Length: 208
Image (tube, rainbow, N blue to C red; front, side):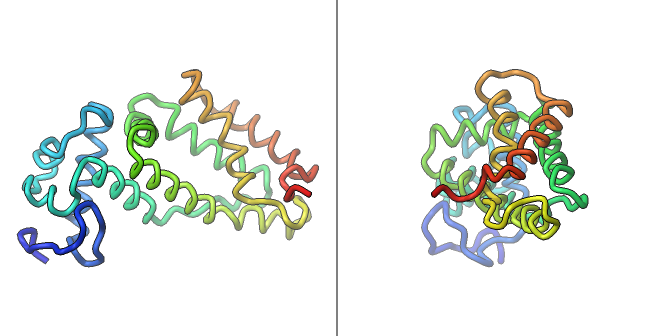
């Protein structure tokens, strides 16, 4: 498909085959750069068009708005090939997951874009929905971590995998996004150990 081809879909929505992966990736990269440099309030369609090399009218036609750009960038991020760790133990897997959070959000330059995504979710309904969908899909990918733990006898049958993943990352996100405190490997390991112990105690079984 050529960039000049007309689109009949609603602006800001994704039509399968409606644009090349290369174009979409270029726009995504421009969105990430813009969020890192200017935050959500300072991101504009004009900025994305200039830095992606995609004509402004094409960006407006296919993404519709800054909200559409941010939402699609998050959707594209969720289409990666990331898989959860398999270290052979529940605590090892949780430790690796927690350390991935610290690697992403613990370094200020690296954290600029993902932090801006979170900020955008507070200012845009579409961004909030996209962020919710991104993490819901990530939690679903992490289900094997708990499934394997149950099979090894490290977790009770019925343990809520999504709740476990949320619990191990929650202290890290709280410090990064709320109290603006530094995070690092020691905190990640501490969180993993605490959640693994809580899992063994049945803390993440369904209520009732």
